[in-house]
Structures are given as C-alpha cells and as structure tokens.
Image 1 (cartoon, rainbow, N blue to C red):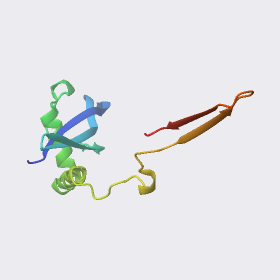
Image 2: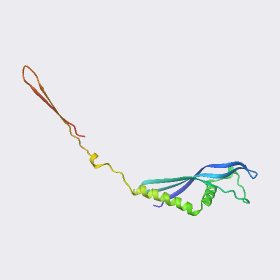
Image 3: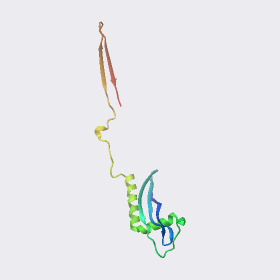
Image 4: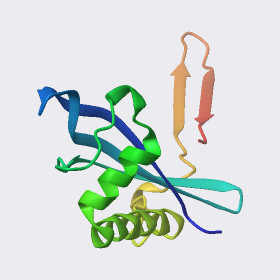
Length: 142
C-alpha cells in the first residue's frame, strides 16, 4: 500500500500589525504526518518544524480569519521548496519502512532466556525418644 501524507499546521505566529494590516502571519508551526497500512497494521511517522512565511509585497492580503489549512500549507510548501518537502516525505517513508522491517533488533541475552527453574529442598527431622524421620522435598518449576 502507498504511504499517505497529511499536514497539520498550528499555531501561527503573527505580527499584531504590519504594513497597515492586523494579525500578519510570519511563521507557521507544522507537522507532516505519514501513515501506511500493511497486513492490517497501521504504521505512523511524523516530522515537525517551523517555517518562516515571507511577506509578499504587492500580493493581496488575506485576513487572518479567512486563512485555511490548504492556503497556509501552500505557503509552507512554497517557502520550503519542493526539494525540502520531498526530503521530509522520503525521511518519513524510511521511518515507516524501518518499522515494518527493522534494520536493528534487540534480543534477550541467551543465558538469561531460561524458562524452567528447579529448586529442591530436603528437610530431615529426628525426634526422641522414638526415632522418626520426616523428609520434605519441594520442587519449583517456573
């Protein structure tokens, strides 16, 4: 199955006022998420960062209340450039591939991997004036 990618962007850092406008975005805090389902198991990876949003003089200002995720995502991707966006996606895909087929595994030391433990206890009691012997044997298996 193919890897799916989606963005979340929050919060946005803004200048309270700039060039006569209010709440002017200059930095976006982003997360790019990836997921892939293999054999009924969903694998996930996430990259996070901040991205400066350049102020474009001459372009129409969009009021803060009218901003949408697709619009701001476009600003973030444009500011990053296609090579950086692709590098992040490639990294996320590699993280998922490493979850599916780990390049390194951690195993229990073989000398610690015992499943059965035996303990034997023998007690002998001698009573006077008649002689009697009691023997107790305890075996514990774990």
